[in-house]
Image 1 (tube, rainbow, N blue to C red):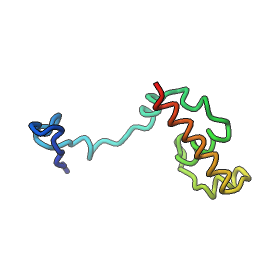
Image 2 (cartoon, one colour; image 1 turned 180 degrees about the vertical axis):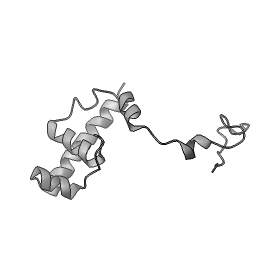
Image 3 (cartoon, rainbow, N blue to C red; image 1 turned 45 degrees about the vertical axis):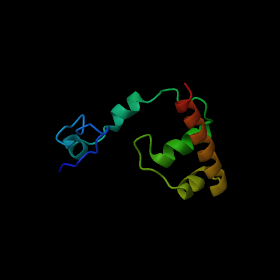
Image 4 (tube, rainbow, N blue to C red; image 1 turned 30 degrees about the vertical axis):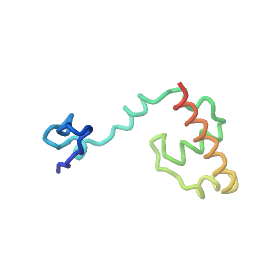
Length: 101
């Protein structure tokens, strides 16, 4: 299946796919191992151990299934609010790490 890509500029004919198709988008799967290798290995350095655990387990970053906030709260013997705070703090620190040169 192909899809039509919008031109990047007014006089553009759909670069880099001049025929308007990007067959790769429909046939290739994302290789999470390669993606993880490209990630900043020190991105989690500023996070506490609990923040790291919540972020990794919430989004399944270690190759496991993502867990719900309720599951994390139960597994870590914390309240839902505490898990939400840990997740928020962890994501904020990651954003700062990624967006700060």
